[in-house]
Length: 199
Length: 199
Image (cartoon, rainbow over all chains, first blue to last red; front, side):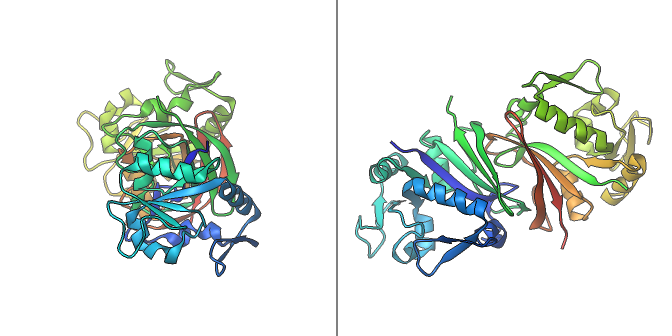
């Protein structure tokens, strides 16, 4: 059975988005500051990474079998035009199936009975591979339900001073982590991987 | 002329203290989880660090010629019983000289005319060495006055979920950093050093 992990590009002061949805040119600079092409599920979009970041990202992608996102992100991106850009079947945690969508199709499954059910469904889809959950609210819910196994942080050398924290208002803090299990120094990013421990 | 730097033990989610002044057993675990003695200015207090953390800490201490702290910390510690535990002359930024203290003695100088004056006074004291400023409010004021040159983060694998952020409510965010210039993997800590850039 695969692991449940979350990952995000995060500023040194702990934000995955700056105030008013700003700061992405800093947070995702490492997606485009190298010369090694990294394909996405969208044939029109190729990222250009340094070799370190490319190899790290490729390895992570190879491990991912399914994703979980929240309804807010799904709506914000209008369902990414039909498929998550990482090209994995995606469980959307929501109270109601959005208008115009079937409860399940090839790209999305809408789950309405809580984070445990969403993780269970995503694990079925992922099989031996990992489940990747979105940073912010969903990752927090997974942590609180003690379902999160690993955290990937792409630590970016910028202070955003506010915005959306990677983890916020945790109910069961402090959460002690093990690691970093790996530390990879890219350009404009440090890739860190931690294991979650529950006591 | 030396540099102005700040440093702190920080949780992965960006806090230098947890909610209600908690979490220090996690944040400062690396001060006592090794077998190499690290002396402090207090003869009764020796920290036991791993070799990596000891060498990192020793090197940093050798660079420090003076400190700046805020009045809140000075009061909270009751002036550390007469001398800052790092054994460096310390500029205290305050509106008024606290009762019972001279405006200046061997251990402390009380400066009341703003962060620029505090940094200038601390640089005089430090000579060729660096000035170390306390995390939180003082570090933020230095950043906003464009006086901060470097940031040391001792990144600790714990999520505290709230508390005192290392940097909060920055007025001139985003602040772009260079680095990490160095990455040292200790036990229960990753020592990161960044350079501040001002555009």
